[in-house]
Length: 251
Length: 285
Image (cartoon, rainbow over the protein chains, first blue to last red):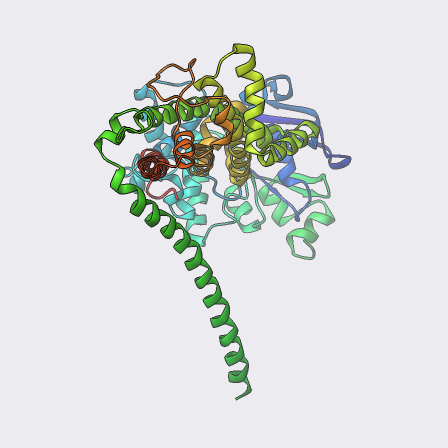
C-alpha cells in the first residue's frame, strides 16, 4: 500500500496558541481517511495544514513536514500545493457571480487554460464524477451556481475541486449542512472518488466515518490520540479516551 | 381576554410606526417628483432642437442653445470618470483586501475627510495643480477636479461592497490554487459588481451637477470646443451664468439646461445599469 500524504511532527498556531502539538500520520493513497474528534480539537486545522489553507489566516503559522506524493508541500508555492490537494468546505460555497459551467471551469480558466475543448471536456467529466451532470447538463451556462439546492451546490463544489485534477481531496464536514438524502449522495460519491484519489474527511458523524473511511484518526485537544483502521477504532480502540468519545461519554 | 388587550396596544404601535415610515417615504418621493415636475414645467418649453444644436447667442439676441455646454459636460465627466473611477476602485480593493493595517486606516480616514472637503476647495486644488502650471484653463483641469471628488465615494463603496463578499467565496478560490490577485479581479470584484456600479453611479451623479469646482478649472466657453486643453463650457456653469442675468430668454434657457442636466444624469445611470445588470445571471441575485 502506498502512502499519499506523510505528516511528520506537524505543529500549528493561531497567534500564540498552539492548536496542533506535533501530529504524525501516514495517509493511504486511494483510500478514505476520516478525522474525528470533539469541536475545537484541531481536526479542521489539521486538514487545512495539508493544503496550506491554514496560513491564509494572517495570525496562523505551521511547522513540521507534510509530504504529498513524496514532495514537501512547505517547500513549494502554496498555489501549486492547492492544485495538488483540493478542498471541499463545510458550507457549499459556489462562486455566486458565475454560471454552473464557469464554477467548474474556474480553477482551470483562472490558472490560464484557454482551450474551449479542454474546458468543455473537463467540465462534463468533473460534473459526471460528482454525479451532478444529469441534473444540470441543460442549464450549464444559463443558471448560476447559487441557484442550485444545497446538496447540488455541494456536489458542484466537489466537481469544481475535481476539475483541477488533485491527487488528494480534503473534505471539511462536507455533509454537515445537508439533509440525509443529499448526505447519502455525498457518501456514495466518496466511495466512487476513492478509486481514483485519496480522501481525507473531517466528520462529526461517527456513523459516516465508519461508512466511508478505511482509516480513522481520533483528535483530542490538538493531539492525534489514535490512528488505525476504522473497524479497529470503532470496535476495539486501544486508548481509553477514544473509547469514551465513540461511546458518547463526552464530546 | 388579557391577551387581546396586549395585542391591541401592539397593533396600535405597529400601525403608528408603519404609518410614520410610509408617510416619511412619501415626503422623500414627493420632493423628488416635485423637483422633476417643476423642471419639466419650466424647462421643457425651451428644450427644443436649436437648444440642442446651437451655441449661445450674444446678449440681446433671442435663441441659441447649450449644445457646446452639453458636449463640454460629457467631456469633463468622461475625463473625471477615466481618472476617478480606476483610482477609487483601486483604493477600495486595497482597503478591503490588504488594508487591515496602519496605512489602510490612514487611507480610510483621508478618504472620509476628502469626501467632506467643500467642492470649491477641490476646484482650487485643481487650479493650483493643473491650471497654474499649464497657464490656461482647460477641460482637463475640470475633469481632474471632478475626478478628485469621485475618488472617496468610489473607494469607500468599493471597499464596503468587497467586504460584503463572504469569506467562504475567497476561500473557495484559494482552495483551487487561484492566486490572490486573480481571485480579487475575477471572483471578488465580479461578485461585488452590482454594488460597485451603484457606487460609481452615485459618484458620477454627484459630480455631474457640480459648478463650483469648474469655475476656475474648465472656466466655461461661449463657443464650440472639443479640446481637452482649451477652456470648455459645462451645463452647470452655463446654468449659473444664465440664471444670474436679468434676461427672460436666458432664464428660460437656464431652466432647459437644468432639465437637460437631470436627463443626462438619469439617462447615464439607467443606461449603465441596463448594460451591466443585464449580464447578471437570473438566479445570481
